[in-house]
Image (tube, rainbow over all chains, first blue to last red; front, side, top):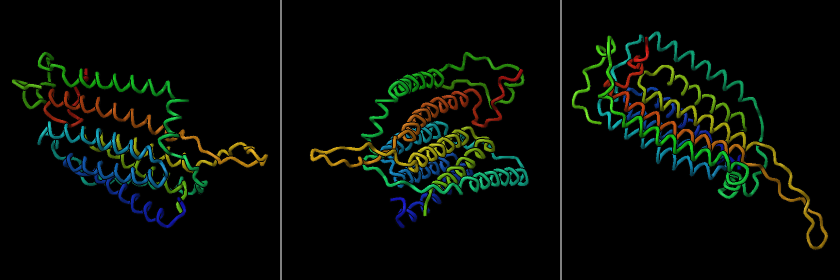
Length: 190
Length: 121
């Protein structure tokens, strides 16, 4: 499958889409546009997972990332309203160009280093990447990490709950820190 | 044709874009999205490396007639399993991170990361 022209075209299209949407995610000023960029990026990666015969991971990617993470981001952006955008970046064009150029060079260097790793895919075993095979691995060899992951998710949920519901009206922000805030939190309900 | 190097190069580029966004952007929300980009790049590496792994040959099978045949080879889904756990950790990280953003916004009425200087002595 990895040697058919269909895969070549699919890879080229999805790779370009993933790169373009990644750049869009980090460069848009409005965070809701960044979230849409992230959404497209995740869809492109799910497509790349299909070209790699990772059917189960494609489904997990769509359910967890698109269904939970991106929706969570959009929710928070909606909660914050226009304040989510923040004020504009006051760094000069030269500084930004230097940073972007430096990181771009680093990325191209890394990519050129690994792109020569010419490993061809072996013929795909019938069961590779299926829910059955990955499930057997997760509930067989990796059952303890799997249970630990459930504990992690519970802890994360409780932590998010505790952090987001904390009553900050009782926190006294003193000194010069208070002058930097727009106004003290009066009548602000969580 | 497409080989492992292409996937790794793509993943390196996505990781660098995410790292650049995390370092340069001052909006905490966009910084969190950049972290998601980096985690996704790592997932792509794991899944691609798993797909391009050589086959583990299956054992020889003797059927009822006494003919010895080679069983089909297999590839252990280790990369897929790791990517699965990375996705689980990323989901927990996004939930906690966004809760911190909300809490921070309630405190300072902004999502700029340079406004987070309450810990300085």
